Image (cartoon, rainbow over all chains, first blue to last red; front, side):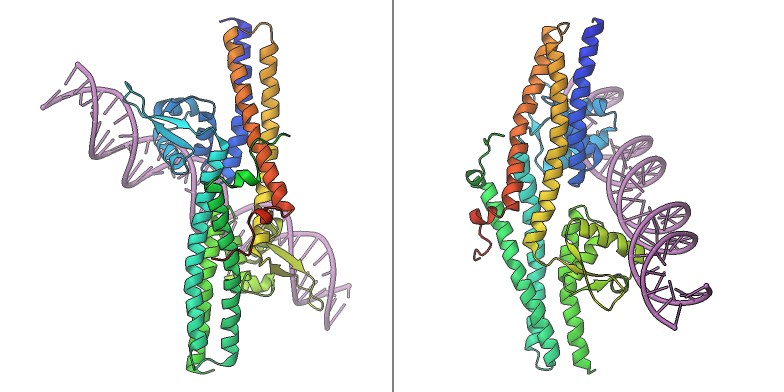
Length: 183
Length: 183
DNA sequence: TAAAACGTTAAATAAATTTTTAACAAACTT
DNA sequence: AAGTTTGTTAAAAATTTATTTAACGTTTTA
């Protein structure tokens, strides 16, 4: 291999690394571990990888790659592929950022709605009990009512968020905001 | 204070705590520290608080409250209010979740677009240089071109995300998805 | 102008998370 | 069936992040 060929190869790797770094950094912000973030960003430029490929490429331990890949599969940023012949499992990165966006945020928001709505429903029941309790003083009833109403109003937001998730999942969001828009 | 009045007060606190716990847990997921998450969730049920109120209510150190409040101000979930007469600073929680959603995600997505687009532009320049380099072998040129094209395609997503941010900021999103939708 | 109140910064401690090393289990090869 | 290969689980180590204690600067009050 010639001198300049080698230089070009290095330049390509450095260029990729810039993007890998940026992608990994944003994923970090999304609550993904550094190992998983680097792994996904690396896989973004690869066709497919085995656990051993990953370990070699990132110079990290195999269990680390194993857990990272599992985490990435959970948020559907990586999928297992069937590669005949090889005993090793092979994985591919989801390269369509629209799909990653959809899965990641829908998952996140749905969980948020579920958790918070459950807590709200329970709390509202408690407030009703206090209000209905004949031994409660007017001041206490007023307080309970105030909190009940505050929670009731907040439900509007959670319904909206659920609606947003539905419209992302069914693709309607792209009717409002087309993917193809130019600069 | 009578026995049952005391019981009602406790029931109210417990009900609030259920919601506080849920809100704090979701905020945790959004990369906010536990102290800040608990603080916001607590403030959600309060009219306004001073740093000392916070320290007392959460039983945490004052510097912890200070940094937490600052972080919450950054993502605009808490605002400083002017309270005449008191030397202490007073803070109020943003209670409209729609506004919190808008500020938080727009900030996050905008930073993501900026960071990643910068890296992409730089990398694309590098790839172009390799392609134009007369000493590059056909194989290397093909490789550089492949990566260049992959990045070029990914830009569609970042443009879309920018567009989404714009349409959230200007409120158009609520034309597509009204806030008032019933159950 | 001295003392107190308030908030922030910096260093140190504590806690939580991430990664690794080591041990294990299952599937495959020979 | 014994020995590999592959991937995962569990315990340990390392790193990072969060929180506290201590010190400081500024403003206010007496």
